[in-house]
Every structure is written in structure tokens, then in C-alpha cells.
Length: 114
Image (cartoon, rainbow, N blue to C red; front, side, top):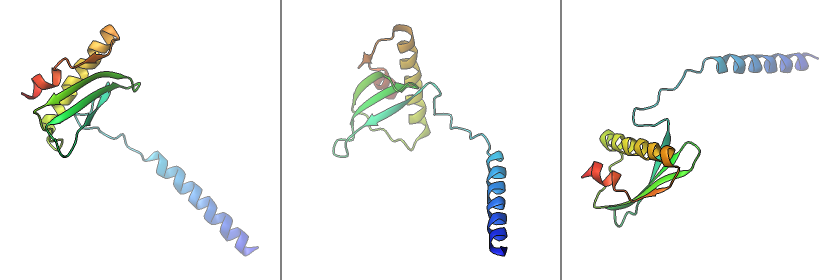
């Protein structure tokens, strides 16, 4: 009988603590280079780091733009690089929302990085 009471008490305390822990969540602040309109993805190769393919997707995971970028090595540790990719992403999504047509190799990224 005592063991049942102890187990029930411990179970009640665990449930109560988990309920209080969920109330304390704060809103996470995203970095400035993260767009709320979509996301980008870079495909590259370690043997040829200056040949990349950049894909831009909207929030519905629809590919809106693709560009082959030659002669540029993306250092994704730098904030400036990520901010330029964000700028190109938002212009690609703006064009997608206007036309609803997939764009390919319009040289938007190449112009930003050269």
C-alpha cells in the first residue's frame, strides 16, 4: 500500500513538473539571415568547391529558382554571404509570386557575389 502511494505521488509530481516546464518556453529569436518567406540549399562538391548549384524553395517546399554558380566559393560561416543569399532568395520568391513560373539561371546570385 505504501509503495502504491509513493509511486502515485512520484507520478503526480512528474506530470505537474512537465506541465510547468512547458509554460516557460520563450520565443526563439531567429538570426537576421533567416528568411520567413522560404529557404535556400547549396549543392557543392569538395573536389570542385567553386562549382555550386543553389536552390531556392518557398515555405510550401516548392522549388522556385535554381542557379548554377561557377567561380564562387561560398563560405557559409560568414554572415555577409548568408545575407546575400537571403536577398537573392527573397527576390526569387517575389518573382515566383508574380509569375508562378520556375526560374533557372537568371544570374541573380552571380551578380551579388562578383
